[in-house]
Length: 258
Image (cartoon, rainbow, N blue to C red; front, side):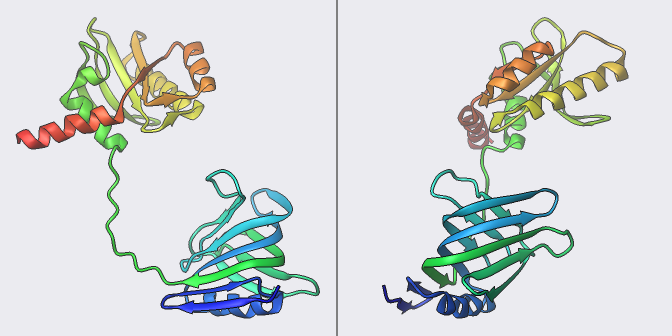
């Protein structure tokens, strides 16, 4: 099938180009600092802190002007391979393929993409000056619990936010309805085993510092993984589900009353 090159305003797109044509346009798009999108049959190898090889198949590959690279398969939201901003992109023709490399500047990490057939190559400028504001952060959760401690449990009273211990900072420290000292680790997304281990480290450190054994440890998050919940119970810790929407509602109501 012959290739078709479309040029319209800030978008340039070629469908079914040969490898030589793809190579020329790819170099041009990268050189001009365009967001470059490639749909191609390829195989991918990675060498760095570990190594991997992804066999031949069709993928969606995105190159951004800051040097970052994302390789996606036709399922899932996470890239199967990626490089961060600041990486260096290079390309060359081989006998039967187009080879594209992405190398990090200061760390020996290299992704090599061997392209055999290209379905689509597109380059475009994106104008994006919008401010990104994230709502529902762990900081929001802390402030909401400080305002309305019952978000965590009835009778809970906050005594301190960001309590320093040797391994880091306890998100929330307080006293429960029975007068027991309680520490809370907050997660805005699904709590993992790492979060459980982090909470345990904070709890053990505080016990040593205060010379007190009777301290509750609570992990609060919208959700928790099954493996994290099993570990939590094994360690004698607790899980409390907490709603981000309710936290944001508390903060919104506070702003409207000030």
